[in-house]
Image (cartoon, rainbow, N blue to C red):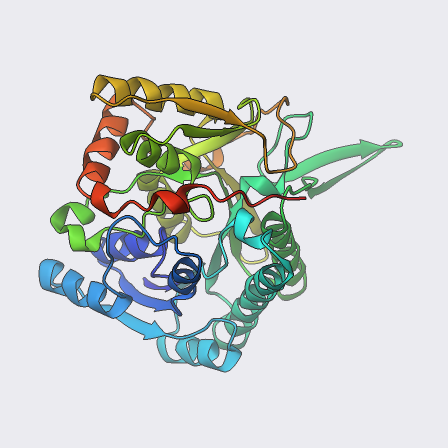
Length: 382
């Protein structure tokens, strides 16, 4: 396959580029370094120094013998994006080129506006580029489990069958996001569903939970290939943050009661899920939705696991139950379905002590780079 990866310099995008290349596919990687720029501006750069995308692809070619074609440019620039589609005629496009942070979207009005423009225009441009150059190209879009919120019913995989006054129909599962970032993801799904209906596009929308981890089979070849591992409040996911906090004796930042439950998955499984969605595509005229998670935990569950592993490695790990800066339910029902990707062939990696120990050991190599000031700065929803 020819696979176009938008946002290829990111936490998911770079390891996915190598993963698809390793499987023998032709990979075209695109990024505009937006996340790098935002991290630099907010003084919350990743743990390990990362070569830029051009340098990464050269290093990958030296190690693997496989070439990844690379473009630096903005997906919100339609003429730039359409030109890449016209030149390469991809069989599948993975859209990761969005502002990925809920806290970032809540900092102020300008960052809120930037989130809306970047996320919605990029999705619109992908839709039009596919339709105008290769309508059979599947769009694989990374959504978020945060679109659903925490309803008091089971969360189905994207769709809900409703019976009302003796009649039945099938609708997108109701969405109720808890941040502006998650709201733009809802709007992405609505955009995609609209264009699937009118143009018969093929789309897989992956409702992804928070991803944790840093190493993959490919990064083991050379640590210069590591992804952008953020540990700060803005861009770091909760388990990644907790491991770093434990290592530098920073009390684990548990918001509120810590009873908030979410679905999580290993970086290795995120790559599997996206890849399986590419090679086993949706049908024309189908918006296929999968809940991309492996297991659920409360924040307290994760804090306890990190505390236990950290103490076994000689760290003094404390937990700080702090006022919740977010507006969210802390006590709630949470039971999402997540069988679709297993049916496609996902072989999940569950969160074990061994996985956490390996995370600790890799982070330890770079602990001199940890910026304590970036760990928490108190971005509040109100």
